[in-house]
View 1 (spheres, rainbow, N blue to C red):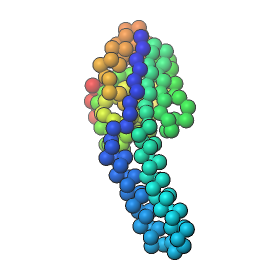
View 2 (spheres, one colour):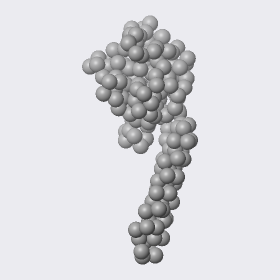
View 3 (cartoon, rainbow, N blue to C red):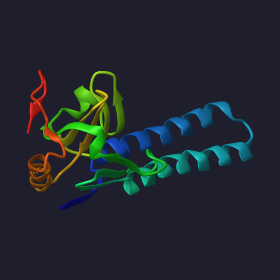
View 4 (cartoon, helix red, strand yellow):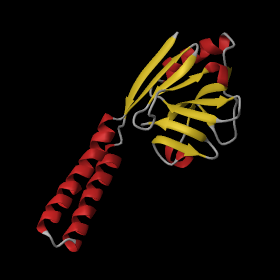
Length: 173
């Protein structure tokens, strides 16, 4: 009983637009504020390196999720410096649900919301919602809901975790 998924960031517009904007703004600032030609060359190079670095970050960004009958393991570098392991013993309820990344969490990536808890997502609008015994909440985005639901059904049957209770303003599956 095991689920494994690797997701990549797919919102290319959101990656290219800020990178290009950052480079352009830096170039404009350089042109109007620096008089020394050596400094202009350095800052122009910087205005190219920064956007390319941001672009490379998002191109290489991966959310790795592994779920088995003992834990959920997340790898999401550079947002998580070390892998996050969540034992099922700490989870009260779990289930797949549809969510709105922008309205509920403010977007994709590693996000925190006072009302909704933490979210780890790179694309889409479906995720594994965890409600911890201490009341904290964690949402992990997934593109493979059916496969994950099969594993969750087995965990429910074995009594390892309870199904996600219906909540106001939250659509399950």
